[in-house]
Amino acid sequence: MKLLDGKLIAEQIKTEIALEVKEQYIDKGINPPHLAAVLVGEDPASMTYVSAKEKACREVGFLSSVYRYPANITEDKLLEIIDFLNADHEIDGFIVQVPLPKHIDEQKIIERIDPRKDVDGFHPVNIGKMVLGLPCFLPATPMGIMTLLERYDIEIDGKNCVVLGRSHNVGTPISILLSRKAKYGNGTVTLCHSHTSNIAAIASAADILVVAMGKEGFVTAGMVKKNAVVVDVGIHRIPSAETKSGFRLKGDVKFDEVSGKCSYITPVPGGVGLMTIVSLLQNTLKAAKKAVN
Amino acid sequence: MKLLDGKLIAEQIKTEIALEVKEQYIDKGINPPHLAAVLVGEDPASMTYVSAKEKACREVGFLSSVYRYPANITEDKLLEIIDFLNADHEIDGFIVQVPLPKHIDEQKIIERIDPRKDVDGFHPVNIGKMVLGLPCFLPATPMGIMTLLERYDIEIDGKNCVVLGRSHNVGTPISILLSRKAKYGNGTVTLCHSHTSNIAAIASAADILVVAMGKEGFVTAGMVKKNAVVVDVGIHRIPSAETKSGFRLKGDVKFDEVSGKCSYITPVPGGVGLMTIVSLLQNTLKAAKKAVN
Image (cartoon, rainbow over all chains, first blue to last red; front, side, top):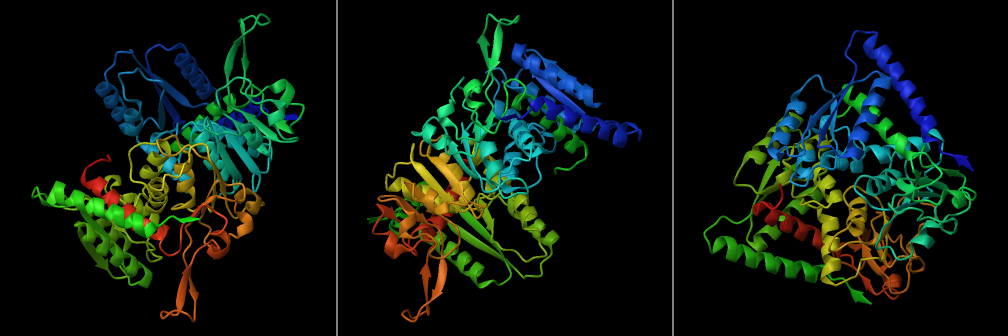
């Protein structure tokens, strides 16, 4: 078994981006790519994510800015802010950290973002272009999974791929990316979810198994084919007496038993999670280059 | 075996639409829904399709108009026409008949159509919204397949669905519609294509098999599970000495041998093809009601 080491690959890609930023922007006296984040309220997880994104920007030499607003901001005011960011030529791409407070229509906010600055890849036009194989911003987590698999030279073409979970930001888009006609793609994909009756049987036939169910330890060794490639998208905080923090991170896959059976597996933490932020950086660089219209 | 009778269901739906047009528009003195078509050049198949769409509009009481242009029209001129139709309040929805001449960028034309008038459902924003389960115009052929299955009370939820072919206008969107979380959906879908190595084995495990490969007689009885539901999207003109026209229409499925084994099957002709135009009418009615924004 080999690890699909998200930490290693994320560092490699950040080094590549940092070099490009230095050579193509800083050394030429051009402003580097600029990622902005909109943060509403004080949800601890959202604050952590936004800090991590700022830190990643600094590491590669991007400009970053965070627009912070109280949880009681009105939807209209937030729409105005989106319009401002859409029009601001200094900002190449931006994200609106979700979840938003309940009085704000999240979908309405997302659809107001100029698709050319939608580096989260959540706007319907970017999702539609993804389906059609047109230039677009891919959603960060599925994009990170594809990058990780590609860097490890995992063959997808013609392989039996099974995706567990059909969420809008992971399961459904990764099923499309694995399946679509592309230089890296062309897998035969089965998308399973809560209504699937025989998940264990389907999963255990997979050459490549992507697990994004959001259920801790859902996938056991019995559900994995020998020498399969296993990608674990789950992240769960489990109370633990053995760590200082009082918890451990676990995935949707029982790592201890599955790792002995598969050919490759992503660890949790240190797997897919770290690739997500790197995808956001790659999308921001793409936005700065005006590679998506 | 029962037929999934596209002709019968298409007639039923047209009758329903005609009644709604009479009661909600004509009797109230309101202009009925208006579908426009843009036809470039004189491709015989395109001319036939556009005529059939005009005829269907007349049958249900819609207004219809056809904008005809020579094959040498410039791309800029065609874009201007799109802008004109986007702005014309008299027109609820319109389609640009494809294929377009090679000097015109088809995707550019499609993306210029106002998504609120894109009754073909080809604009990326409509495809993205389909993936997200938001109100949108669905592409006509997959929408017609879903309608046909639903009218025959075919259970999809939790069923093993296999789609053969991943085209942008049929295979990929029907795989999404069968799979997505919805009142009618929730199937477990495997999407197969030219890179799939074991199509016969996968197809023969399907409860619902949708065939859109574009290969005449591709699916044999050996590839179909007993009592499966078979949907045949293929249409091929086969020379025949037995018909006046000199040809017969055949599908991607060997009807004679498969029909004895399955529980339901669409005939060719008289199956999916007739549902496509009906979906276009349904989308036009939806556009007239401003049900998609």
